Image (cartoon, rainbow, N blue to C red; front, top):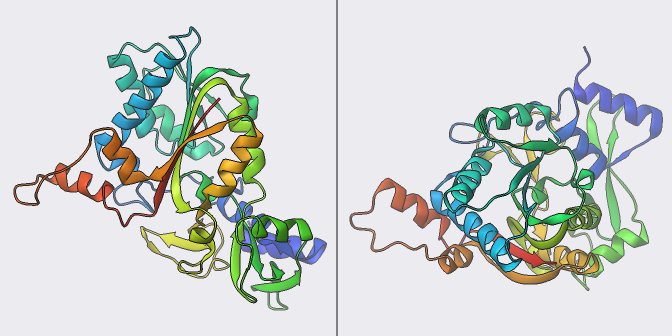
Length: 334
């Protein structure tokens, strides 16, 4: 059986260099050997752990947002709560249990493209009525609340080294290497919308696929709210060069070169919430909130006192409230 790298090299030999987005798509989602398709270790001791499972406060805040949306809509029948990219299913379980405790009737839907992760989610949600789809475009519009935590950062990115585009090629020995080509003007424009004066030779990760995904997410909500949480910022906060445009992780620690051993390491890039807000507005969703994650949690009443006497749970919450975290919360309403 050929490795993912060998198959990518064969594809390049046949069709020419790949965009970095095509490479990242394969490295993360290849049906046989992609990082996510294999159901990577998530949580304590795994490749990465998300804030959603670090402390119950995170799920409680999501539950409060969903319940408030149900109330604001007049307690509609057929209210749907959707999680995009549910990971292990742990957050969905906490949200479902929390809404049940508040007597909020809803249909629970999970959007998951990885068969390996969907299997883990079914175990976590055993005994609860839920259904799965692979893409939000499969959902008919319904009144509801849709949320996603650390999903957008895994969307494949096109990579610029201004003003050119960085491609993925193969050398005569079968190693994956970088190549350069003139960037498409539309791709350049996507960066210029967020950063009017890019640095010559500066590296920038861009997501043309973000706009259609936001449109599909918004299209599944006839009336209600969307809550999207990820690491990133707006405009220059993402593209100022302080953080590498593409980062890799293995076992919770920084990984190697992105072209090294595709499929064996996570690969992420910061999310431009300015682009997200523009895409949402074009899809008929107005921005209600754009704030750091600590501010969002504090707004739901979560906080910790002095360090003396804190329990382990208190310290976990303090970690989520750390103002140095680069996590951003965006909430929109249709």
